[in-house]
Length: 436
Image 1 (cartoon, one colour):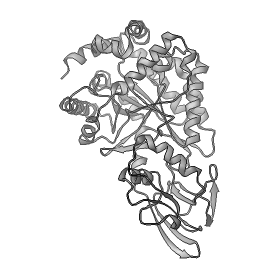
Image 2 (cartoon, rainbow, N blue to C red):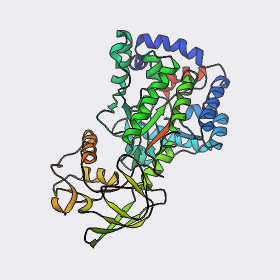
Image 3 (cartoon, rainbow, N blue to C red):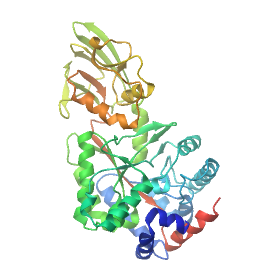
Image 4 (cartoon, rainbow, N blue to C red):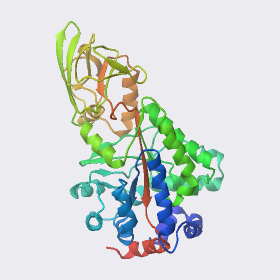
């Protein structure tokens, strides 16, 4: 990459520091990196799970054997671009050209892939359509920042380093936005949680293993409480510094009931598409009784609240109960659906449907469990507040939950492979300038 771009993304002082850091983390051969990568995989597999790594195609082409070995063991690999450049500023034609070249290399090296993560987590409005046109299933490039670390307690130097990274990433704020997949241009867009390893180690200057673990455990707890998704991002070259944090996060994810669903990005994207096809059929039986038929897969999670169910249910989370049957009788004073005003925008209806609710724009307020008005305009920033309003109501609820098999939240362990040797790292500068 060009020095001017590196200095913009990292700052000049960080760029100098980065050079010395790279010398300690990479070797002339790929052996040092491969050993660290395999240990990383062993830790995740030892907990019973599999990670997802996004790798640039040129790096894959130089070091195919190790990647193929891990792929055959079930590790998921995603495309991290053809080369490690800022695709946000690349033309649509260049993106399409690069993605096609990357696809050809992955196919030639027999590495299965369905997903993409942009270098630097930077994309623009043209990226998703190009990815969709090239057959990708998901894009995991949207950064979501959690307010875990009080940077005001850090030195001015560290504050400036962290703020410059945030200015470069331009992440959404988890206090205001939901950490959930969403559909965009036919793709499943999966957000990445930060602080990641670079922000923690290089920008915030936090190297204490316990403190690193506390940061990730805090995000895990918040996503669990909210029923959301934690996509942990850890580059393999920093694994030694973050191993304790990763181990403790994976161990903690095993403890709750309802459980945390730990999955690869591919599994999350496939589930999101599967869930999107679920529907309910509700027929009134009179006297406040409703027959419900759930058209869904066996691993669907059906939740009810403030209603009576004829049949077995399992206690779930808060006041919700989980219904295991797919054909059952529900008793409720009002129809357990959400009514919306006739002038409600399409975006809010699609969002509520994606959240598993039954939406009806033909009912009056008194005929449904909950009625929502003033929804002519609706955007990403409105989702969290709307969900909070629904949850605080005492309305009868019937819905499909976000995650399979009664899981409360989800976790994915991911990392990016930008280089595996010192020469790979140096070649990134030339590739940025000359790869067309």
